[in-house]
Length: 246
Image (cartoon, one colour):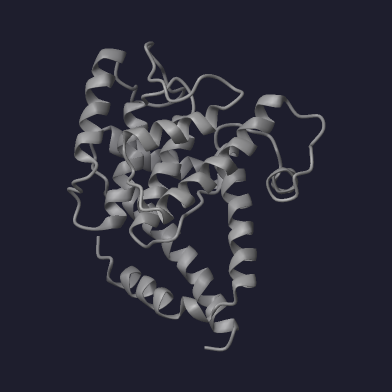
C-alpha cells in the first residue's frame, strides 16, 4: 500500500503544529482521550455512554447505576493511556515490561494483571482460535524478540502488525483487545504519528480485518484500516491549524 500522501500529512502537521495554541491542543487531546477510552472499552462490551465516560475521565464525577467493573474498565484505561503517553515522552521502548505494566493498569481492581494465561481461550464468533498456553508462551516470546526489529516497510504497517499479532496470540485471559490497541497507539506515537480511536460502530469491519490477518491473509487489510484512521486524525489536527489562520 502506498503511504506517500499519509507521510505528507504527517510532515505538514509536524511543520505547523507549533501554530496551535496550547489551550486548543489540550482541549483536543482531552476530547480524544474520552473518545478513545469510550470506544476501546465499548468494543469489549462496556455499557458506559460517551457522556458517562467524560464524567469519569475528565470531570472525576462518579456514575451511578453501573457495575464497578465497568467503572474500573473506563478509569483504568484512561490511566493506562496517560502512562503510555508519559512513557513515550521519557523515551521508554515498547517492550515486554512495558506491556505488562500497561496490562496491570488496565486490570487494576478487576483481576491480577500482567500475567500470561495458563488456560485455553476461545473467541466467540471467530474462525480463528488463539494458541494453547504452551504454544502461546513460545509465540509471545517470539513476538517480543521481533518487536524492536520492524519487518514491514512502513511504520503504519508495523503498528498494525503490533496490534494484529499480539491479539492473535491472545496472551492474557482478559484485556487482550484493550492492551493491543494501546500497544498499536504506543507504536504510532513513538514514531511521530497521532493515536487513533476505533469507533465501536465500526467493530465489525475492524474484527474482520484482524481475522483476515489471523487466518494468514497478511497485514495489508488491517494496515489500510489503520492508515485511514490515522489520516482522519491528521486531517482533524490540520483543520485546527487552518482555523488558527495558516
